[in-house]
Image 1 (cartoon, rainbow, N blue to C red):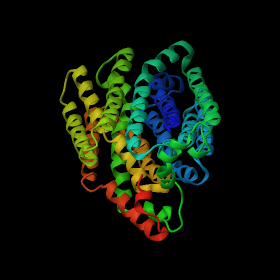
Image 2: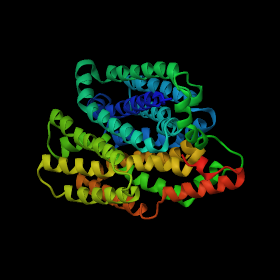
Image 3: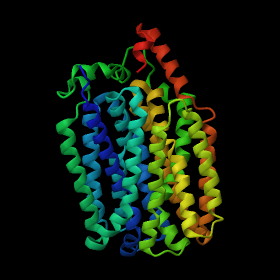
Image 4: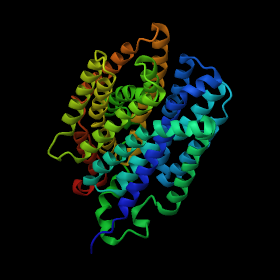
Length: 427
């Protein structure tokens, strides 16, 4: 019997939600100008608004990841999407800096746990050989969705105003929820469209994401050195990446003298190139070391960002930033699959810890950027140099990280406690 392909529809659901989450979070960077004018916000205040999302997202990541591991992805993801859609719409009713900060903080809390639970969903629904490819597709489309957002948001703001634009984006989340609840099941074996051959194909993945007696407690797992280094490299990666979805349009307008329309067009490049980087990583031959890809990607990012500050041509500088984004996004599928290799049945929890630190960077990076710009009279090169330094730290982390070794050690420990064969535990 030929295996059914229901698992691919789950990948499409994951890609759809990933794109939607980025469209809704990136939109505010393009709306920063009209919001600042209407609410009379300074750069420093706008930096705090940008950072509110990252702070809340970080604080609620691990609780939402742990809930997904314990209560199931279907229930938790539905609650997540409904919550963030509500606060996306409420962004349009903000009347001052305090109200906007509170709404964006709650929006960040609503989005917390999205990608850790998507990672768990893919780990349960895909065999190991397809996981990295699915992650690469998800992150590629996510970047491209984010790349399309600046011009799309600019049009929506021009036609409807920034307040109603956020209401329109929120409706998309409700549509996704309806489709997800009708089609998705936590256990592939319980899905009516999965035949016996596909169930056998996914059995190892079901074992991987099932809790077993004798396995390591989630708290002690989070305290291992592998997890510590994993989250540090992702913090530094995110410190760089958040510039692209917060300060980049302002940098192009004020630091490079571009018009709003030209800035919106150029701001597409880092996310566009980043999507190709994620895709290239997933399609890379299996014989290539994932650790080597991650190290070289981050090292190239550091070099390109440092060089960018010495490039006078705006187009050449943005191409350099685009290639830097391509290089760092080579690591995205690798980092998220490492959460599966290290976390096992606590995949969402490990992924949440990693993403938590990433979103602390999402709070620190725009806030620090606002402070640096305010106190140096707009020295953008200093801010970009800090990004180059962060990318170098990420590269050094991958000299230590070894997710495959961590997986083998976890499987051997579990086999000793349960008597299972490591052949069964290895997907």
